[in-house]
Length: 226
Image (cartoon, rainbow, N blue to C red; front, side, top):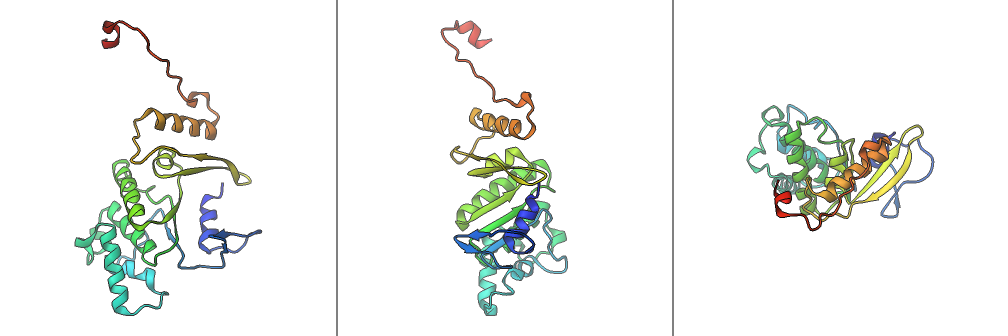
């Protein structure tokens, strides 16, 4: 339904569209440092170190070498990779490589960070760990993020607002406000209700209707304990 195409439009990689794209009231014209992007694959250059890969995000910023070096070290620290600044991509785990990609997306201090299924290639455990990492990084960097995902739980866990899109033609079907406080608990009833609501919205499958929880009143203790 055009989610990745939407990110390409927002970052300025594609100008073939009708209408206008505004960020903070300003129209988008081509690629700009106020917008960073992280892809599903980390896309690190294998012959460059962690620091050198992150430094690529500053190529067009007009900074002196010393300024760039300080900025790179700041963002290496932001993503918790201080001990790996001189490591090469093949020496990193999948989650660490994605943290480098996030640092590269943030190093030019954009106002918005676009993420195109950044954890889709990771195993389930690493994906959950990286979701926690992204929340912490987002809080430290104090930046707005726009995340494309096919994972309903990931959307609820990370987002303050979920935009449900429908295909052919791609359009906004529904916007769901996520009012759950952070840190969010995946096992909570409120989280589960939102998950079922969104899955029903996407699939129209009655199995995904939010559960009805009946109140338990005046039951003998023996029944409650069994």
